[in-house]
Image (cartoon, helix red, strand yellow):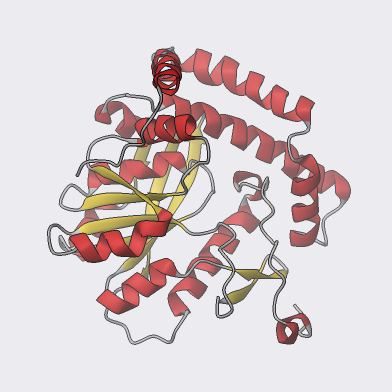
Length: 307
């Protein structure tokens, strides 16, 4: 399916092509230069600039109240390293072959999951944990479905177009998160879809959004994946990545809902939240702590409850 393209000025087009050439050139560098040199340089730069350090430490203190400052700083530094590695991973995807992508991301149970899904549509929920950009490689092991990578549109049109190029490879359709539901409704009868949603971001405020006890605080979550799954009776999987070594990861599909089980509202999102919390508690440095995740104030009745 054709991707939407922004209207660019001549200068913006020139800038985009120049950046793309740089990214393509970087992706062709040997692994040890990209990850042995540039990851460490990026890590050093992030630490030197103290990039969002205040936000990160505040998030960590609230999430792990029993940990000491030295323990939290160690997690913060680990999160800086993971962020540096993911920046390098993202640029390293620029125009590389499917074969190369599948060498960098392997899967433990893709065959079993394909058989369980049976060629129909499916919801894939994941998070900003480990190699979130590399998660779109799922498209290569689900060839029967159109893999729909839902993304947040960037304000800068040049960088938005650049990121779309980097993310684009075989069997991927990029869809702005604001058009997720509409895209599925309009195209569900054309071809089965695997909807890939990163669902751990701070959601847009609405009065009836679901709240969960998450990392020792009330936290609002997106429930768009659950809305699609319950309305169209779709199976839902959690995609869990594990770091093997620099630039190489292993992914596992964990069934959250089979599309048939009778469930109460928000059960799917609750299961997603628990799986994510479990992974963060095991390896907190792998999550992206740099954003103000807890901007929304929970309802008064929740604030009155003990966590």
